Length: 163
Image (cartoon, rainbow, N blue to C red; front, side, top):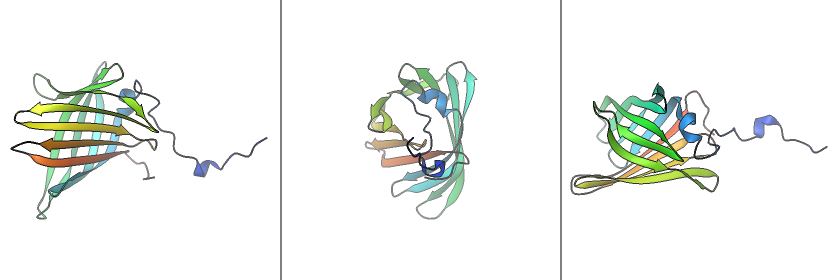
């Protein structure tokens, strides 16, 4: 009989079994920490709530702190729709409008996907990484004549201890 390591040192069970399980694992509450390079930070919560079969409403809210020290509350909403091997993200408007479609693939121990969204005249290069510790990251590199920044957000399950 082989010795098993104590459960206290085993890595946490990641909810990301594969590309087709990511959508279901998003449901619920997450703590978020965002950095917009050189411009702002945000801490708060994000909640994915089922609003229809194969549709989750994403709502984030939190405290934004600008580089000059000013602070204010902010929020944003999207709709996430299940798709084979990933999901589609829509702007939560009266008539939902496509933001991007994310196809997810294995990337080492993580799962990852990316997409490009043209918001004329600027371009959003977005990437999602679903990590073995159960957290995930979203990065938006925004480039163009009106915008030039990198937004990076880390999501950890609400109430989970950082690894």
